[in-house]
Length: 227
Ligand code: ADE
Image (cartoon, rainbow, N blue to C red; front, side, top):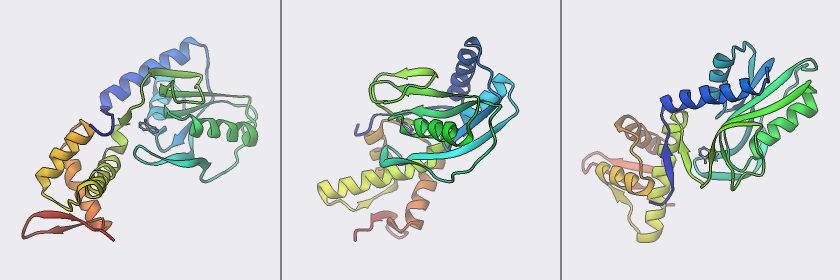
């Protein structure tokens, strides 16, 4: 296995979100507004609204990880905006705290620009050995870095993982041509997970559309384009 990956199911997300909501409730924190950090925090934030009984939710895009398991240098607030939050207690929610930069930046941005009563942070998972920032609330402490394949990034991750596998294999061995079956087998060997037919098929369509691979319909071969 080349990248330590764990497939996360929708059921696990619901279960983790319920537990996270319980932790927040037990602490006595009742936010007036939940802010989802786009894009990863959307589903957990929406579920927390449900389990904590909160009507007010909006989102801000704080981005660091633009590609699966590949980090940009700096986190940025993509579309900065202002709301009057002076009477609000805010809970900022993301899926995972990895380096911690994304959630930390969202928190600082909100504190400095929206000036709310208070801001707390929550994430389903916190990778404690690498994170420079610890959220106020989390459900799972991850002790060893893993790429979590969340249900909402399944396709994006799949095509990026396949692309990486094909490019690195080419660099190491010169291999450019792959059958569909070889890609599936390779994916499983490299990442140790199986995402299912619907995702592999669409991932290959995307790689063809993006002109990263070409498909030869006669030989049923995917060929990595090399420039
Ligand atoms: N986003 C940032 N870090 C991540 C990780 N380790 N797994 C899944 N998504 C992430």
